[in-house]
Image (cartoon, rainbow, N blue to C red; front, side, top):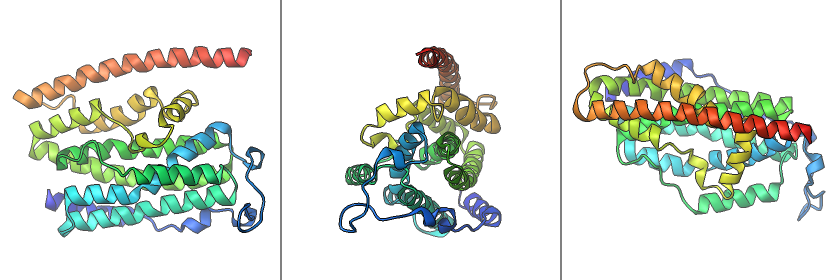
Amino acid sequence: MEEVVEAELNRHLRAVKEWMPHEYVPWSDGRNFDGVMGGDAWEPGQSKVSGIGRTALVVNLPTEDNLPGYHHEIATVFGRDGAWGTWVHRWTAEEDPHAIAMRDYLLTSRAVDPVELERFRMQHMSEGFEADNSHSALHSIAYVAFQEPATRISHRNTGHHSRDPVCDRMLARIATDENLHMVFYRNLLAAALQIAPAQTMRAVADVVTGFRMPGHGIPGFERAATMMAIGGIYNLRIHHDDVLQPVLGHLKVLEAPGLTGEGLRAQEELGVFMNALADQATKFEERREALLARRRKD
């Protein structure tokens, strides 16, 4: 895979565009908070973003903040030498501005409670991070091939639902990076399917059937995830239609011919899972629509 990584790294560097996090922050809106600066305490009425936007932003930023943990995981799996190492460091450098821009925006615009945000960050990072799929390079590649588009979509939908065009513009720019990272990992996964089809199919099946976002350890994540699902930011239908299906379809995973043994079993497991997930997504949509209808009636 080393030659593939080098080629993809060079392609990525030609495609990526430099951007400056400070340009996406409304600095003129900022003022002192209470505490040592003697400013004004935060209260919800100061926020320009919607309620569901605040929930999603409080979940999304600690996920971006935990970059040191993610870097450790991928550097341990992929190594720090050669093209792999160059990519690991480049990826980390490109990811870091996401947390910088988001935190500066949230504090300057008073979009969320800064005390809650800092306590979330402290608790989440203090617990450390261990990836679900770090036991092999193939599992790690497969995971990020799906996790990157999931993060992209979560950011984009958060921006759309925030009701603040400044927030929407910032998250759209961050989502552009996540998309480029997805293409990198998706292309690695395509090469892996050619080099080691059975092992890669097993890794894809394991990742898809057990997928969790990296922020699952955030305090109150399940409740926040439920609110985000109902609010249309990220739910089963989005996960199935906008994350899993596009990647699997692009790679033609479910149609890959010539598999035998473990590779064929993994492909069959994946097909059964995707059908079941589609059914679950439909049931979720029905429950969601019923709930939203009751809320509109009330």
